[in-house]
Length: 111
Image (cartoon, rainbow, N blue to C red; front, side, top):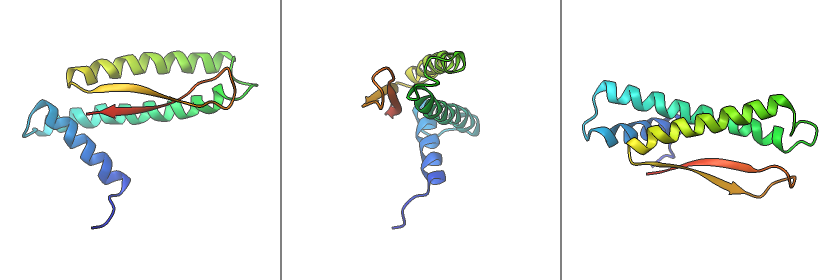
């Protein structure tokens, strides 16, 4: 069996999320799940940007970085609220850091 592409994996995740609401999801359920998962992937992209900004001694305390971090935290809380309604936890996975003042994180969905 061929390995699934990223697009196929994402579509599978959308369908699994839609099934949380209804075992036979409607087109509207799938669209809502797609919107939620796209928001999740954008949050991961923002977090990756912040990983570089927060781990660079020239940019870690700049207003731009702090604003992005506040945006990420607000976005994380909003998405976590959506996922809690579907009985899914969105958690931070903290890993080692390059510099002592910064944290690195990746989001994971636990279904």
